[in-house]
Length: 376
Image (cartoon, rainbow, N blue to C red; front, side, top):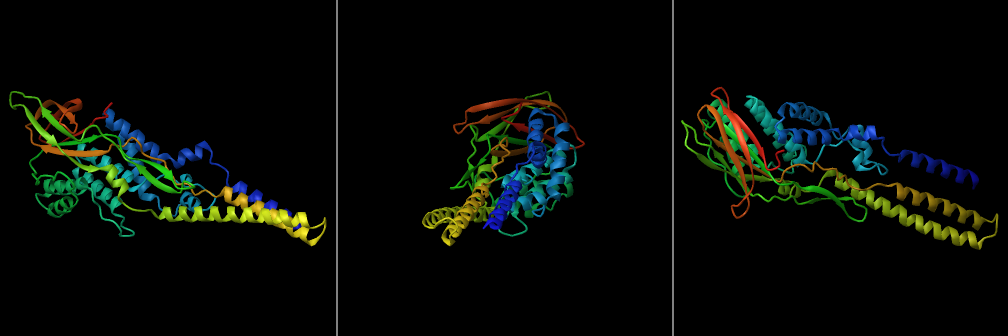
């Protein structure tokens, strides 16, 4: 019996050593994508676009190079490592927004072709090209893809517009007009966040986002060459809808199996401990029943430790600063320095918040405005 006990002790020590927590430095490394996304969005909302660009570029590079076969992802699939140990890549709606924001900045910099590439890559993040279970259903991603195509080549955006129209759940976007030269991107509200449910926290769920504003209005101040102008900025996409309608993840099945394993080993441990205690109490010291009972006690203890070390909890790290609603409008303005205001409107048309806007329209390239009801 003693070698058996010794082997069990060694197994326990090995198991516990494998369950050690990550150092703060290692966890920060695995959270890098999330932290850079958060920081980039903070810079975007404060108008510090130069600071946002390299952060988003680094995330895009990382997302393009990370696969499910990386070491941290393999660790997260094991019974004894939390899903949150893996390098953060985000759920599809979070990855979409990385490319969406980078596309806006490319367009702002006079690179609409690179903007279109970002919008297309964002659509792929939502479409699940590997398993072919989902199609992209963001209105704006397809609509902007086609709009850039129309502006660059004078045509070729028809298919993208058809795809966009299939995804419309409210206001439909207008027909393309390549003469429009001011692009207004508006976002509003607080996006969805994640939480764990189930007996062991193995189920990933989403708390719905919220927004006091449900649409927006963009006003341009009058000048000598331009009367006052006001255009609606409709909402086309809802991130809560995107987060909650895409279906399960491959990781959900892994976590469910972990939960079953945790319950099974715990149940076996309880049974072995009870049986071992009964046998040990019935047999005399040194008897076979005593030996068998002691062995069951050790096995039960080992099984209980294995159960306790099993980590089926879902990863609830969230890009919590995302908006809930995405709006867009385009208009044509003559060159010159312009001022105006963006008004975010509630369900009854009331102004929930507003932002002053100052911008330059030039004949060389489109003017792109990024406006948020959470601008700093």
